[in-house]
Amino acid sequence: MVVKEERQGGCSVIVASSHGVQSYSDGTLDTPLLESPEHTSTSTSSHEEEPPWLKRFRGFLIVFGAATFLSSSSFIPVFNKRLFDSGRFHYPLFTTTVYLLVCALGGLAYFSSKSAWRCLGGRGAGSRCHYLTAKYWKDIVKATWLLGIAFGSKLGLANIGLDLVSTDYHVLFASTSLVWVAVIGYAFLGEQPTTEVWCLTLFMTVGNIMLSLQFTSEKQATVLGLVTNLLVPVLQGVCIVLMRHASLVLFPQWMTKESSNSGRLSGGANSLRGFETRDFYFNLDTLVGYTSVKCFFSFLAALAAALAKEGYFADVPFWDALSIGIALDLVVGSVVTFFLQGSLVLLSMLSVALTTGVLSVLKVIPQTFAAIWFSSSVFDPTALHIAGVSIIILSSLAYAWLRLKH
Image 1: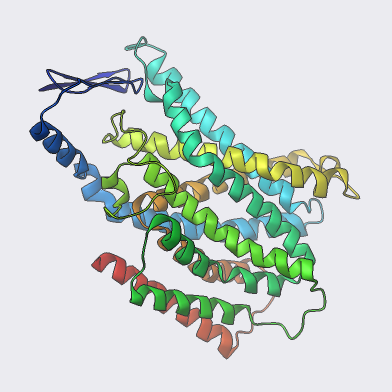
Image 2: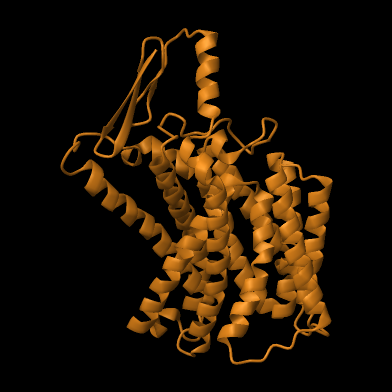
């Protein structure tokens, strides 16, 4: 078999001839009726190996993704708090909805500029790129639409739940999300934690609960408020598992490190296998496309709640409070949100769902320190706070050590 790769205008066109598979830049496959078992085995084996760039930078990409997630998830609450407390614009649900829309539009701008630069102008203008094919976007939409709707619904439900109970109870219920990630990931993805990881999950949940125990009584609680806030961490677990599932569907096994006995919610191997998936820039494009499409469906899911709660039924609708200064703040928050969402996708590509869940618990610590640093209030930590922080940090380090050992 002769394999020839042609790069036209920055796009790969792979042509395999003589009893092989012909794969073109539009994702179509031309497979012969008969193919020797020896060739099939060799081809499969070679494609399961990590490309050199991933072997060299996998550790760096995981650390970069974790650092980006922790820093951006710490920045956004402080930034939003400053915006809301200014008295000019207190519309948290609408703000999040705008962030999601701008993230989706950012992905559109990325691919539009890339198409104009690489595929539509100058050398190789007649070539077809993967991001100009219907199959590429159809596969991404098919893998991410449910995740986007679940994530947008979770955002809307969380904002409604926060109005029904105190912040302390809201955070307390949210601290159980890690357990849901472990349970749902095991049930639907077959990602079975070891006994040690189950113990660490329990320790981190306990540590998070200890950080949340700052109240003496709940005066606002109703049955609806309790049920709503109990559903939020369940949806959080569902979102993280669906994010991992979408990565399993879109990216090859050498990227996701999926074990041979891992379950799937649907489908088999990665759906984009007809393209040149070993190329770094192809995977970067898919990460951006995945993030953008997910944010677009999240925007659609959260839009109705934002228009109702903070628009038509609000005393002062958000459109009456908008200004140029507010618009600039929303753009800044949207850019940071894109990096936040992109880092989550990157982590789901490279590790199991529980890793993202662990980082979602660990983020409470930098968020707390960021809030203290940028606020004028004095934080008086108790023994309960110190114990909770210590348990979370030690459990996170132990989990990282187990993952590296694995």
